Length: 263
Image: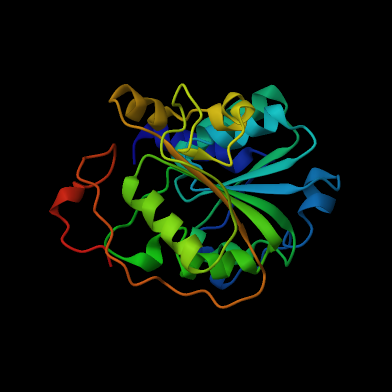
């Protein structure tokens, strides 16, 4: 580990709005904030919004600036990346944003039933080799149900045609209400491809661009967005369908064209 990363981890350990609970720690340590985020940390009754796989935290911080009447929590296991958003929000004095460093596979250990209102999935790894690793799979949707309010909102913003198509098929197959869907978020015109999306949305929370998102846009790639609701009841099933694999090399990801299966 480089000296830069060591310094960042030291900073994170001292930040009052950062909670670090890697998987290995939770075998013996309980999380006392579960069910008490509003009362013990935010000190208000405002809705809680999660950004899962927050990376540098651009979305969590950007949303916190624009919506002071909501609480935001960025979640990721990569502490060195998270340091950027955590440091920025600390210096700005933002009181409605926090960061949780942990594995998303155990995210339900940190929030009580009905404690979270919305989830943002911003440029998640499409995980084309194994469905259960995708953050919009039944594996994860069942975990979200344990703390998301009934009919809570899930936002997906992605550069991956594979993950976008998979999520759309998943939602349709399980009759999850899709409220907005577009294959080209920054298209200059709003037409059929922007079903359910208001023009004003592209100028607000959807226009917040992460570091890697801008890299993909500079390469001529389109950004996809979907918003759907997750009912508390009903069995969730994985659709038996073949989805065309992404054939480009994305930043910090393995070459996808070498894969031979989408399941």
